[in-house]
Amino acid sequence: MIRTLQLATATFRPRRAVPGQTLLDPSVTRMRVHLSDLDLYRHVNNGIYLQCCDVARSNYLADLGAFDALNARGWYPVVAAQTIKYRRSLTYRQRFDITTTVLGWDERVVYLEQAFSRPGRDGASEHVARAIIAGRFLGRDGSRVAAPDVVRLLAGEGVTSPPLPDDVAAWARAVDVAAR
Image (cartoon, rainbow, N blue to C red):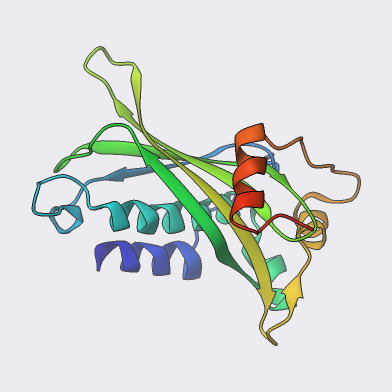
């Protein structure tokens, strides 16, 4: 329930836009593990990671100052597909960051990486998990919004997609979200 409330706050009362933030700049969301995040094994439940990703994506849009422009058009983001790989566990009260980065886009979707990290024993950042998200935008009337239209709205004309990493492109084809 806590993560649902965080998502509502991040969406309906977003944090302030970051001056100079661009579409391809990473966005960092800082969080702490709550008791309600834990499963019976006393580490963060796998479903909670995805809820945290939702919050971080809303913060990414807030950092761009995108909510007013998207709402004016009646566009909203949805997840078309996602995958996540876990490397380390998060446990009660640990702090962690989620770094959200746009990897690229095609005609249908925008591909994002959401990397979880935590402070390590030596002070360096430890990789915890990596999620790849294929995100779409829909209109309030049920229409699908082409990813390049969203990119133009948020980044202006002339921004081109970086080449997708090979593993992301292969995954997008395998789960059938890539442009055909």
